[in-house]
Image 1 (cartoon, rainbow, N blue to C red):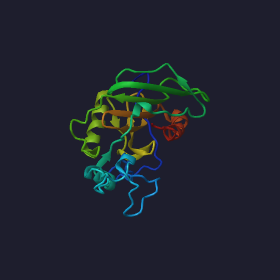
Image 2 (cartoon, rainbow, N blue to C red; image 1 turned 180 degrees about the vertical axis):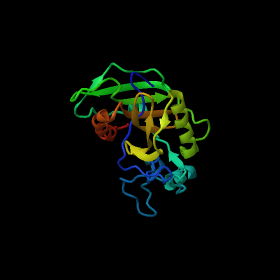
Image 3 (cartoon, helix red, strand yellow; image 1 turned 90 degrees about the vertical axis):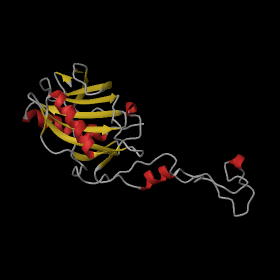
Image 4 (tube, rainbow, N blue to C red; image 1 turned 60 degrees about the vertical axis):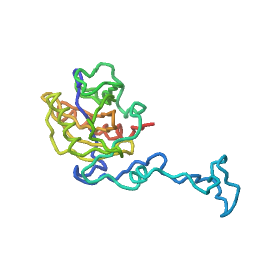
Length: 240
């Protein structure tokens, strides 16, 4: 992960058990009603021509593909994660109070292809190296055909993906992975331990991208400074 830093970060607020149902369903483009802001012509009216976007001469109206309707109406199953249907490389976030951006860190063991890295360290009080807030956006993610037509993947596949990331950096889970939200979309949070530090992390997945925010500390006194800043950092994430 990070040279002289590295891990993943997290927030507990609004999280639910890993096995719980995902309660947020992303709206799919094209699933809303057509012409919601236009006045509907009365029956038998000839005002609605095909050139004006209304019904054609046969009276047929545009229809939403059944597949999109099904995805929009059905929530993900209890054992599925709804992937983000947005470009995660457009994500923005805010610097928490009492921190400043740092350019002293790099990801020396990336888990996917790096698009963006960002780090922040506390200024009051200042802390030793490895106590840092991190946001990394990756591209090149491949679910190897496990994502269905509605952009959902089994939770088992998500756990396997996180397990590969932990193995790559020599980390171990400190608790169970849980469902949460990042930027209003379903995400995963978990606490992770390495030899030199611990962190609490958030993973927001799309079909090909990953936004990974994490907050790491080296000891209990540093945790008291770092962890409270993680929630406002993650709350500030916005995409699109």
